Length: 81
Image (cartoon, rainbow, N blue to C red; front, side, top):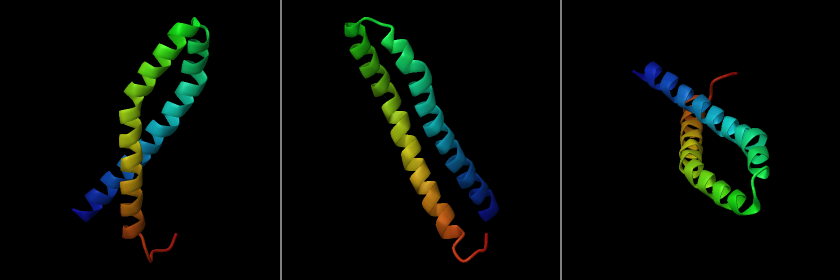
């Protein structure tokens, strides 16, 4: 059971990093240039709407990253590299 939990925690940790990094890169490389091509009034409303939708996913990924990171650290204390 412990091995399965360790694998699950590591998988959730890596998935959280992928969601965070991928979301930031997507926003920076795709969303920002696309929004820049819109009229000023639409830019603000669209960026606010997209930030609100992504915020909950971002907070969940940060919470999972922190929780699984602490779990992985505690479970691997005293082990070599």
